[in-house]
Amino acid sequence: MSVELPKYYFRIRENGAVVFRVDTENRHRRVDMDQIAVVNIRNGDIKPQGDRALSPADLTAIDAWMQERRTTLSTRELDDIHRTIDHLNLTTQWAQSKADPDQLDAITDRLLMAMHDLRSVLVRKKADRLTKE
Image (cartoon, rainbow, N blue to C red; front, side, top):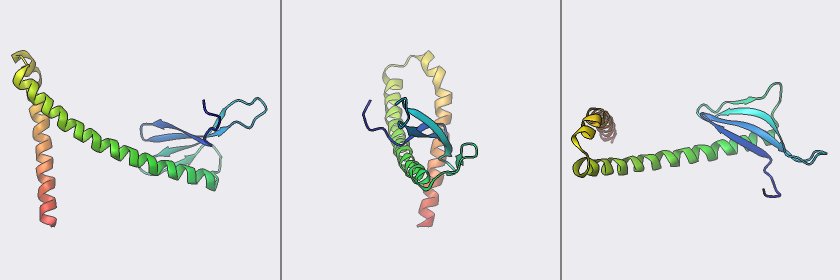
């Protein structure tokens, strides 16, 4: 573990994080983590823990983390879409060259419905963009 610990620790959860203030300045010289807030990344809510009032430094650190987290999630989301394109191409190759009839029967209907749904959304969104231009 590095000598210099951060002042805050963010435990990631589904829609945000639990925020802890890291304390190493105690007589036992151990790392204490004091929960100070819960953050919802989707709606921007910051809920202090208990009756606690968050300091301006707390809020600044939380806001900075939220901005960084949103950027990370956005980057991951786009990367996931590019991976999906790769998976579709690999699936096409598998279906054409390796899949046996039983395997194709097991996935064809579900895959066709998912692809139809995706195509419908993409076509509609593209039409909306073209009409706005």
